[in-house]
Structure formats: C-alpha cells, structure tokens
Image 1 (cartoon, rainbow, N blue to C red):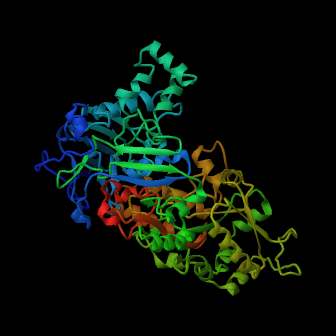
Image 2 (image 1 turned 60 degrees about the vertical axis):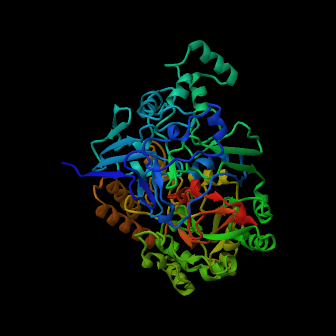
Image 3 (image 1 turned 90 degrees about the horizontal axis):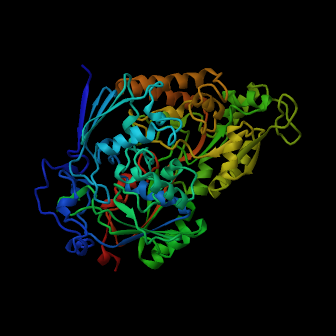
Length: 638
C-alpha cells in the first residue's frame, strides 16, 4: 500500500475549517446590501460555500477587520493588471507563512506517494458570476482545452508530464478530481501554488460559448468577426486569460474582480461577492471593497509614493528610494516605509557564460579557478556600505537563512575579499603575461577584457560593477560594462554571444524539501550560466549543446533523482549536495543578498505585517501575506 497523506484546511496558520456550515451569524457586506435587497444578488449565506475557509486572524497576530474602502496602488505597464492575480493568491493550494502547503480553493486533498492526488472541492463554491465551481470546470480544461490540438497544439503543459507520461485524470463526482501517474510527480502541488499558477480548471459555462464543440456555429462566427481574430481557437484563447486578468466578463475565484468601469490608465477591481473565505465574526473576505491600480511611468512610482498617493506599494520601488520615502513619511505623516527582506538568492549576481562562443574565452570561463578568482576579488563590504548602508548580506549565492538548507559554509565559499589568493589562482592557470598597465593577456595575446552585459534597469547594479571594476583591475582583469535592453540581453546570452551577464540570483532563495531544484541544474535556457545546456534539455537534444562537464552533469543527474525521489529525506540530501556543488563551482558570482525591499503602507491600512519576506517564488509577493485580510481604518489615518 502507498503512503496516504490527507491534507484538510484545519488549523493552518490561523486558518481553520468549520465542521459543517459556519456556526455563527454571517454578516452581509454593506457593499452588497442594496443588490441583495433588489434581488440582484443572493444573500451571503447563499453565496459562500457550505464549508467556507474560516480565518482565525488572532492566531496570526492580526485583528478582525472591517469591510469597506478603496486601496490605491500603482503599476507601470497595462499588462501588470495580472498582479491582482498574484496578490490575490487564490489557488487550489497555497503556501502558508511557514511555507507549508495548505488547501485553499480545495476543501482537502489526498496524496499517495506523490503519484495519486485526489482533490475534494467545497460544496456550494461559486464563480464570481454565481455559477457553480465544480469538477466540470476541471474536465473542460483537461478534455476540451489541454487536449485540444487547436487550442494547445503541444498538448498539456510540461509539469503534467512525468518522464513523458501524462496523468490519468478522472472525475468520480461533481466535487472530486483525481490525477494519477505511475511514477512520482513531487512538483505537482508546488506548481499549483505558484505566483503564476497554471489554472488546471476553467469556467466551462462561460468558455464553452467560444468553443467549436459546444457553441452555436453562427454565433461563434459572428464573435470571430467582431473580435477580429482568425479562428475560433484564437477567439477562445483571447477571452481565456485567467492570469492576464483583463477580461471583465471572465468569471474568477480571486478576491477581487476587474470592474468594467476601468480605463486605460486606471484599473478598478471590486470585491468578489462569492469569495470562499470568511473571518470568525462571519464577515466575508476580502475586507477591502475596491482596489485601484493606476498606471504611471516607472520613474514616478517613488515620487507618488512619497506624496502619499498610494496605500500599498512595493513594486517599482527599490532600495535607492528609501531615503526619499522616509522623508515623505516624516513630512506627510500619512504612511510608513517598511523594510522587508528580499527572497531572491542574490540581489546582484554575475553569470560567466559557460556556453560562450569564443573558444579561448570558453576554456577560461569553464575553469573554476577563474570564477573563484573573480569572486575573491569583489569587495562586497565596500559595495554593501556604499549602496545599501551595510543592510544587505554579503556572501555567495546559496539558500537564504530562512531555508532549512542554509549552510554558512556555502554562504562564505569563495566570498571573502582576498586579492592575493585571486592572483594566485589566475597565475596557476598560466595567465601570467600582462600588458604594461597590468591587464593580463589571454593565451592568444588578447587583453583580458571581461565583458559583463546588463539590462540597464537598476542603478545599484551599475554602481556595484563600477566598484568591482577597480578591484578586478588589481588582479589584471579589465571589466567592461555593456548595458542592453532586457530582451536583447536574454537573446545574446542564450545564443552564446554574451561572455557574461548580471541579473538577480535564483528567484527562490527559500527552498524547502518539496521545492524542485531544477533551477540549480542545466535544465532551463534562462539560467545565464549555461543557456545552451538548458536548451538541449528542454528540446530533448534538438537544439543547444549537450552538457560536457562533470559537475553540471552531476547537477542534472541529481535534479532528475529528486524528481523520482519518494521521501523528504532523500530530497533534502539532494538539495544539500546540489547547493554544495554551486558553492564550490561558483556558477553565479553573488555580490549581496537580502537587500531590504521598501514597502509603503498607508497609516489607514491595517494587518500588513511589519516584518516579512518579499519574494516572487514562493510567496507571490503580497499573496502569501493574504492581501484579502488587509483592511482600511479611516480613523487611523487622522
């Protein structure tokens, strides 16, 4: 018999699930009272599931809130409307604040050896338009979207394939969905909880009107003409945008829905009347009635935050903005500037491209002594003091202290400032010839000009590299900084014409045993140290280059072993070995980590944690901190 793990929403970091219907008195939202009286909406007891997710805020050190008000925030691009899906963080399963997976939209789930997953939905749960949310929505996506050649020509997404095998998917009843593989798929639940989830369900009652197999043929053709698209599949994909969140007609399960009154420069989101969560007082979440997202120029975010024109803002702000934000905080008295830890593995990391096209340079870049020498000749303390007032953490790229895999030895590996040791390593490589100015010469006589390409989007990156220019010159390496457009940078790296690039560290610096270590192995094209190896893996050898170095091959083998592992101890052992390899081999040269992320919070906004981690994965930025539990207290603004 396989090991059965049943997870239900009981006592999960302040979330408790009532046994049966809510025993207290449900309170109708003032926002919906008139609509309920007019018969346009059913009363709250008919809008929430039979077993709603009940939030115990006191268990998280928060206070019971009050409904009402509008929260103001800003984005810099119209497509960032999707941040409301990120921040809303309504998922089948979600991470709690201890980074443990818990049911959310699901009432519970059963997991047998990571091979068989049985999902149990909440009876009476409804989409934002009041239609039932049930197994039909999962069946529609699986049968009529994921396995439809016109809608998804490549078939179901890769995360549903285990060594090429797709799951057996069944729908025993309206509230039960089963996914089963012959081999473990340990990433399945984690991917469902991501900041950008795959959404393995769709509102079938809405989308089937745009599907060739269900829609009226004449009406469908008329819609195709009206929307000016080429085919029914293009039309379906256009309206089916659950992550983009820009179709006001598409039903959702998020805490807020996009309002049709939105404009190009101002997006309004209104509370979902059928949202599945309530507090212990019987008040339906979210507390806040509306969210206003203003679209502004990137250079205006800090200035507008400084002028107290927002209630909650972190996106578009960086460490360099803290001084102006603190000044505005003091002058206006209307907001506070919180400093959250950053969840990426490194704030600034340099990636020598082991797939660089130049054969002379490629040999040097692949020599670990060269990468170690570069790391040893970075004065991280000076950079930290100059750019971050000493508040960032200096060290190599590895798991952060909040992860169970943090090891101080990995953090210190080849990260001390030691020019003598760096020069010795380069001499050992035979790079002893120098120009008159001290710059070393390559074996073919060219000067050692190390070109680092950047996206040119963060001033602190340019400043850090300028400081590094001086210390690298002391070991005979001339650093050349080349700012580029982000898309051009990615293209140059992946094609092998970029020698090195600078970017953030791994998105997820907080790995847990259940976190896939695929991003530490040559399995992804967008990892700047080995794009062609990643491309080779992704295309099953059709493109790119096969791994031809022992340590990267070991990383690849270990990551595949993790995929097949059946227990947390094995997965943890794999993680620790992979992190040690990275520490020794220095594939990404980290400068600093955990530089504080400024978060502007209006004095009238409550339940925002004072100390938290700002992370895309895992955490979905504000998502893991449950923005639907934030509330507005106008009396506190005075």
